[in-house]
Image (cartoon, rainbow, N blue to C red):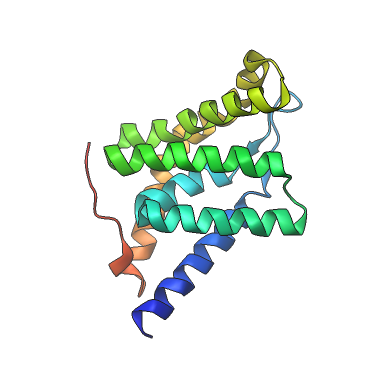
Length: 167
């Protein structure tokens, strides 16, 4: 398979993984505090494949979710803010355990700040509702990154790994 076809196939696969994982929500103890599985998976994808493939896949995933009716424009805006912030952090600071663990919660906080300005909901309420998910993301992102990276090493896509191993 030529490299352009292989790259398009990879982007399509990553897009579907992000889109589908965005529809799975683990319930929280308090209503409104559910956790989307896409956050740590997205962090793992970004750290494994790099920002460009991640953001491209994320944009496509957002269109898929919007077209399928599983997300609204507000969901897409918040997801894109998350992707730009978390992906930017990983892109600039590397794939160390602390960076990967904190990128998702920071992206979530900035996404909630943007949501606060769009809908006018008190910021404190948005952060508190997102807090359980931020903890899940903090605890699982590095593990998921390592799992994704180890799986990809054993596939024909191993030449697309992001080798930016920094602290």
